[in-house]
Image (cartoon, rainbow, N blue to C red; front, side):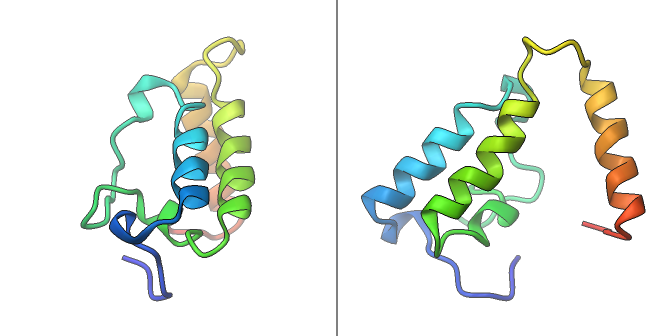
Length: 93
């Protein structure tokens, strides 16, 4: 749950819905279900960007592109990299 104002899907503009769907379509299927979903099923970290749809798309679209199954990294390697980045940044999310 975020502590900032977010826009629920039921109140989302066409721009926000398009940004959310576009970034989601870049992710491999195993990432389809959010680990910490909001009440409407959106990942909390994605919902925290709902006030600025363009920023939401670019931030999470980049991550989705980096997770492409066409790249030579495995899911385990992706997870190791993200874990090390989080540890380095002292992020506990």
